[in-house]
Image (cartoon, rainbow, N blue to C red; front, side, top):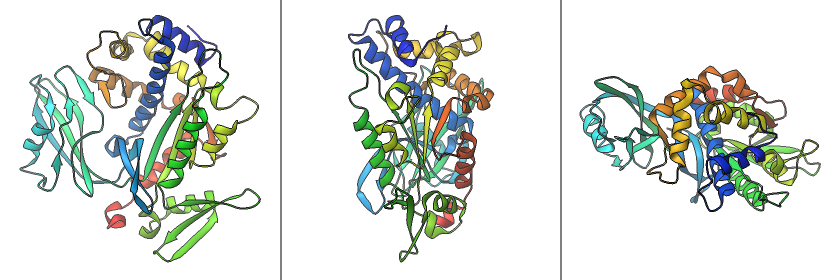
Length: 379
C-alpha cells in the first residue's frame, strides 16, 4: 500500500484506526507527531547514544537560568555507569528496587529518589528512566538484557548540562485549509528555544551573513562566521568554549506545511536560521517507516504494530507507543529495525541547514562531543 502524501496517509489512519474518535483526523495527526519523535529517538539509540539521552528535560537559558525550556531530547555527558541484576519475577521494576540494589556499591546519598518505573509488570518500558536527581546530575536507568531469571540493568550518572538538544516540530493541515494555523507559532517557539540555550550566539550582519559570538574565559569575545566557529567549538577541548555550549538540532515534518518543492516558506526560514542543524523528515521517509512497521509489517516487526494499535485503541489502558513509554517487545524490534536500516534511514531526511550537511556528518559531530572529557570541562 502506497500513499501520494502524508495527508493521504493521515486520512487512511483516521479512517482505519481512529474512526472511533470525535475528530479522527486530528487524532491521526497527533499520532503522526508521536511517530516523528519515535523515529528521532530510535535513530539516536541506534547511534549508540542511549546512555546519554534524557527525555522532556528542562534546560536553562544561557546566562538566564530563571527561564527554562522543555525539550524533546537532550544528550548529556556521562560521569559514571553501574551494572546491576534484578530478579526477573514479573513484577514492576521501580526506582525503589533500583535504589535498594545500588546503595551498597554506588554513592546515592545525595540523590532525591523519583517515583518512575523502569518496566511495568505489563511490559511497558520507560525510556531514559530518571530514578534520581540532584543539583548537578541525575541517575538514568535502562535495560541491557532480559534473561529467564535475571534482568540486566545499567544505571548512568548524567550531568544535568547537555551538549546537544533535539526538538521535533510537526503541524497537520486541517480540512479545507492550505496550511496549519499554528505553523508560524511553532516555528517561532522552536526558533526562540534554539537561540537561547547555548553560549554560542548568532549575530546577523547588514548583508545577511551569520556570524557566531561566544564568551571565552569570561572576558574575551570570540567571533567568526557562524559555521566556522561552530566547527571550531565542536573540535575544541577548551573548557572555556565548551562549558556552556549546546548544539541545537531541529527535526521538522509534513512537506505541505513547511515548504514547497520550489522554495522554503517563512516558517522554515525562521527555523533554518535558528538551529545549528535542521533536518526535514520527508513524506517518503515517514510513509516508508509506517508501511514497514505499522500498516504492512513482516512477522518480525508485528510487535511494533501491536503496540501502536493498543496505544490508540478506544479501550486503551495505558500508552505503550510514545517516546517515553514503549512496549518492551516493540522497543527491541524498533532498535533492530533502525540498526538494520541505518543507511536507508539517512535517505529519509533532507538537510536544510547546514547546506553541505548529511545525517552521518551530524552523527560524527555528536560523537565528537560525546567523547570529550566532560568531567574536566565542567569542573
